[in-house]
Image (cartoon, rainbow, N blue to C red; front, side):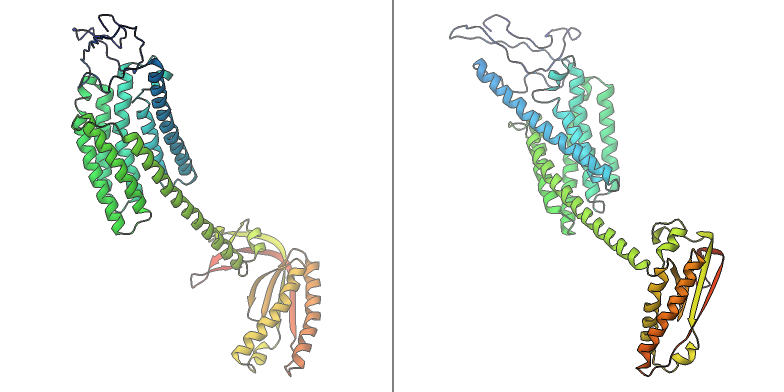
Length: 439
């Protein structure tokens, strides 16, 4: 400024071997040179496809310039923090429910974007790691771009697996990894010249994603209109940035802002999906509990406990155990002749009424009913004494039962009860019809 050097970044040289590239936003304080100023910028470039300034040079008071930079940093930190939290949150959702891959792709996309934003704009990563060179920071920026595209496409694929062709996703991953390898293993002057081809790939991907989402909308996919809105906003911002970086248009970089809107919308969509999945799982769990409760009427809990199972779904063909137990068997004498005098409906009512009186007595003395065989009851006890006490009370209950039937002019019934103690094999087998039964 007026012939005096007031700031420098990197090293300017006419010799390519002596020049050192660096991109570091700075605020420098100049002396009061009076009303007339001559400002000369010396720039050399041997490492990037485009040289010179990417952003405007601001001249003003120190206070105003620092305030402007603090606002820029604050905005960058807000974007970084918001996107990073979204990424961590959705990664934790994936860990809870790994079957759904959409939160994983979304989390990876957010992390890649954070990686890129740290190396853009105010390049805040240089404040954290001041020793990072231009080459490292520049590779971070390009890798963030090249890896954001396949993770974003993977996210869309996970939302629309029937509309998005898997081969397209494989194609995008192949080219993204190829460009990333070029960045990692080549000089900046080379890989910065190839970015235009990746811009073209990105634009084609945007068109394909819009096609996929419109197709999903026509097929009434879940939350498709919100996804389409967020994607459209992101595509507008990314297209603007591509055209702005190529100096086709002169606006400003909008991706960070459109990205925040997109991430917010997608977070709402994924939250709704997980909420619905959670309620669906709750409903399934309730149905399973109800099924287990009903199954206990056919497969006693005690039977499962003897097999070492917690519920009906755990038993399988061949499960068996051998124990010392007491078997109680009772049936109605001459039931055939008695039933022939009743209609089918009366028979059904009679059996249910009789068994509803005897069943609670079996359970009262610690037994469990293995099965009903028509009018007969087969029950198991761990103690012979309990079985005998049960048999005595069953006979007493039968007297009350007969009293209720005699005033209806029904024939008195008698039951026979047999008790035996010995080795019992309990398990699951298949009968000749292929049905699972208990022994």
